[in-house]
Length: 244
Length: 285
Image 1 (cartoon, helix red, strand yellow):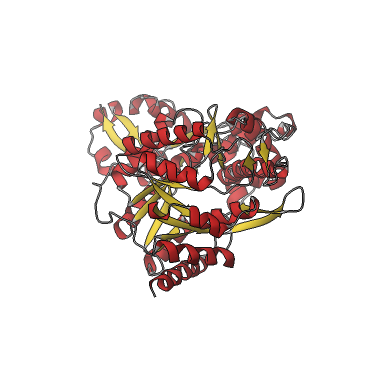
Image 2: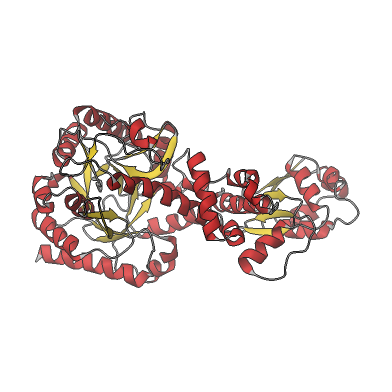
């Protein structure tokens, strides 16, 4: 009998023998015929990862990516039929690989790939109008708290990950050396990664954690540009609700 | 979520295509080649965004067939209750004209393999598959169609023919069948039997939908042809001929052209749909 434990055992392990009890039409051992399933599983998962990580593919090249993807999918096959979520652990896996230690920013750029996909499939929401903020008096404004769109995702890094992402997928200027926080926003259906100005990552993170507007902007520091951040959040429909 | 509509209670006996997002504008600009669309259920299980927005628009214009690829109905374990509820949610708001899944498994020990894996045809597997289909039909509150697989190998332990196995599943569960004639051609070539003989033995009265797709050619260890169900090219002439043979016996059916890898520009897929339309015209002549 060839149960599914036996059939499954060789699918992600190329060194495993073909399970017993599988044949061709003449009752000869299945051989390469089993290999079709083995190949289908590996190729379909690898292609799904390549599609989900365009910037990682761009940074290390498709051939290197395929090696990384094959190692990852054998270690961490999907645990859900929703392939849109597959690969969430790949950035951490990339960070653990000795061969890629010389590219320390890779994992954080890969987190943008994950977040872009997550944002793309996130629930729809409607942003508040700018007048909702403008009509608050100063005291009310400082004590208000924000709800954000489910499609908004903040990624903080010690590397210029937003510039690297842009340079890799869209060309443009070579990334400079400083750390960048990236805020992924989806005004309608297409998520876009925005590089935040100085201090804005602290402020957004504080707001996401439920801090009041007044307490959050205190985290911004001297170079923080409040008008620029508010303009970005409002124009991208990111603030969905004000609460006291 | 919009209320489920009943504008399209059945798939029409017309050509449809597997919907790809890159064809959205083309299909709306000239919908004439297709009478309905099929979607892969799992691609529309996010919380929102463009996929679901597009599906809402398409569902107002076309009958939709929801085709699941991840339920693992042939699996040894129980059906994933979370996934079954996701399917129910999708079917409840969309109210599709048809729901179908595969005679295959894809999940084992919590691993999802993203492929349609084969099962032996025995009394034990028959009972298990029938129980799973009962559960699906009960939870979804609708009849489902079960699709025949592409086979690359045989199980020494099988005691049922695939056609008898499917007929018995239909008898026990009341489900319908999705007949993939490309899969029949692929399996018949790979396992050395007559595709027409398969159609002769197949319970055509249960068919609610027919699939067509392209396959690749390879060889096994002994140099025998080994066809791979790839959905990456045009349907080949022998499969169109097998479709004619089938429709002559079954009468007209909803026909779907599947093209899932190396997806072509819309005009190429539209031509395949027109070729399916001419097959339907021939059977009515």
